[in-house]
Length: 254
Image (cartoon, rainbow, N blue to C red; front, side, top):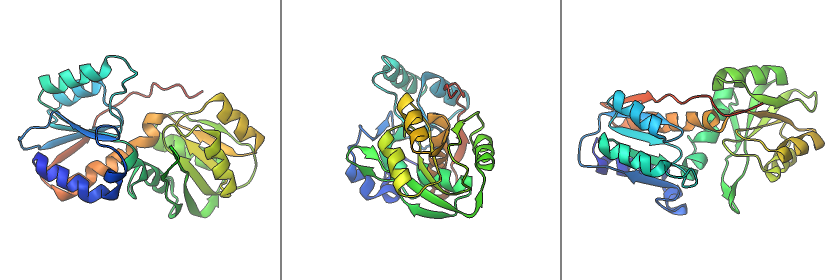
């Protein structure tokens, strides 16, 4: 797979979503050359540790959800330098992946067992709307916490603020900590709200409106969308080897 083939496939997969968001803000390419890319590594975040891990595993192309954040001062420059040093290409895709049919939200809903997608997450007035899915058969909050814990591979924070069985799940992967997103989940009759970050206001409002909540980490609520994208690239270019680059469970949940 060469860069032109990769770009064309990304355009096929995301279509209008690439036009809705600006290149280099919400998606972008770094250090691509004319070489043939044979080994793809994926992760939620690009960090110096991820680039060095990719170099050790002879990865030619890294796909991530996030670019290095400008406000993590100096890290983006270090990542770019390491990519050049080890001749590794990097592609990140943020909001388009959140809203793709195979993206972060729907991937997590399906892996949790929600077979019926009621509402696709999308971008409205600067933030993500809630993705909504339903179970065929309701489960208890205790069961859903266990499923989520096992899926993410980490301890999750949760509040059981009512005793209803869980059929309808509302999700915003990553930083879905805004009270307006909780309010949307309430207004759409969700039995639980799941996201990847919380604040004091998230906790206060969930308790006030009696909404069950489960909070994983930003990184591991979003990894499954990146995995879906990596495997779609592999489906198109079957000679590509795909592997997950390992990130630590260092985000504080409690």
